[in-house]
Image (cartoon, rainbow, N blue to C red; front, top):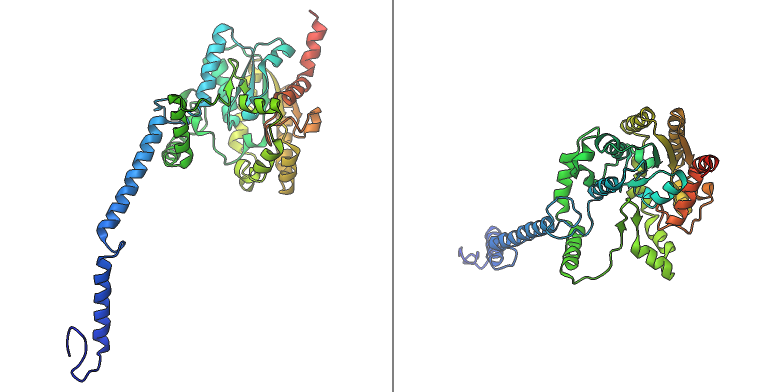
Length: 384
């Protein structure tokens, strides 16, 4: 048999030899193929690794969401937890506030000046993004224990998410020691891992680019959002669109409502009110009672379209459980509680929302006046 061809002298082909020759031929061909060359794989993975490292380094140096404290330019989105603390300290230097508005971002459009008008108490809005019971308690303790502010009235927006059994706090909260020292647990390790992974996201990369464009003057778009000195949130871009008649609430609701029940509310994991968070809430009320702080608590409204979606998925018992618990605990310590989940419960206007859960100031004013009506009557009775 010819070793090169696999044929016998009789002209027949040996099957085993043919198989070996075919394998050898394929291996030879693969030497010249694009993916068969080991060096090309090394180049590919080397480029990929270098790209990931450079992306992470770029996002770390720019720090567009103010998560790492390493930013070389003004962040695309500042650390709200640090910002609110700094604002409070500056606000208190002029004259210490005696009233606070507390809660999540849903509380940020409640005007401290209106609280002062109704109650006569200088007020600061300490609403925080993704605020839970832990941040409500921490904010109060910072104000009355660390900063020694003479707080004697609090207005607190509390929804079921404040007691969610598994939704974490905003990662920014674990970057500010003044807050996390009062938390009942330490998730800084997990938060750090999450932040490291976020360095590789397209969200951060886009925000880094936009932050650089702002810093270099390439992007002269006015700020879309900001805070007054008293912590009140001002949505410049949205209000400008509203004034111009171009704000499309229906489009916002269509885009956001379908995702809210799971992505924001965590409905499938809402197995009941967190025992840890209930204990934090009761500690909050105990501090208020011991210090003689008047407490006004309310469940903030959701847009009727969101309520319809949540109800269809069976979320009503969660709202009832939360409302019953708040009513029991707040009334027991002598505070005032109102369930304003439904817009018509305070004569609100469904058209006066930015989205499915955030109200415009006009609706927030109606709610505040309804909540604090006994304070208004007391001031009238006292006279000028």
